[in-house]
Image 1 (cartoon, rainbow, N blue to C red):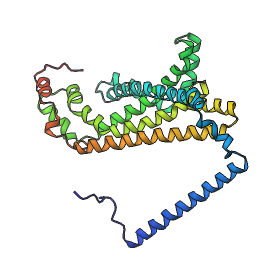
Image 2 (spheres, rainbow, N blue to C red):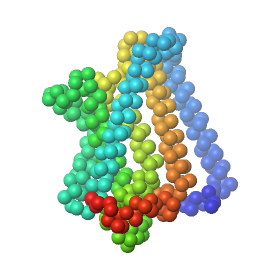
Image 3 (cartoon, helix red, strand yellow):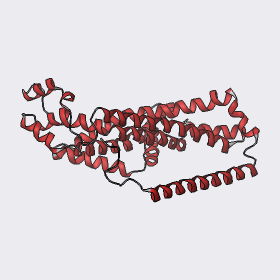
Image 4 (cartoon, helix red, strand yellow):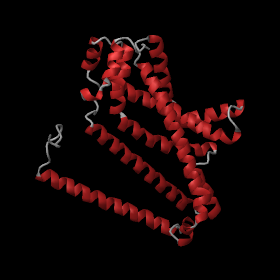
Length: 299
């Protein structure tokens, strides 16, 4: 199969020259902006060795940056697991044929997609503090995880729902033709394909979760941004500390982006890209047979 796009014609000689000129011009503009920023940093004394030397010492890393990185990854990891579970359940609920399940799930998803993450963190922080729901030393972590879980779970629910809707209608009709109920069709045929098809988008959502952990700074959660402020107060180099922490976030997000690309390539190699037909060897034939025989209960 050709790698050329079906949406756009291959660029001709003039278009290639235009693309090259635009690319070169963009690089020149970026270099000029970088030079201007570095010049301003130098005027303010932010490029002196004394400002950056602390980051070459073990103390800054062991006492500040590594604990902050652990805090960021801890909040992100817990939020990812909970958001995937919460979002998958809500997504299935929105696809339910029962209105008493579908409507509450829809309201929950739309509500948490509309409320800012920071507002949810502040609200749950005050709620947990007033009612002593969690220990004081875990209060900030619980609030960060709750806010990230509720918002990103609502986003995952929409990803699951859109993934199911992207599948060919013929698969659902074929499943019903062999005697599967709506619940069995969802569990055995549609949902596995939808989740697989949406894996790159779901993994991409991890980048959002990782970045949004920095909002925990507002509620004194000990993550990378909070540690950058502590370094700046300790060494009087807040701007270099923020730059180093920003570089750490860039590296983490780049690695997650590469993971998303790897997952997307893996799903394509398996022939299970979004909207594509499911291969016969990818169906659990025994499970389908048991479902047709009524061995698997409906939901």
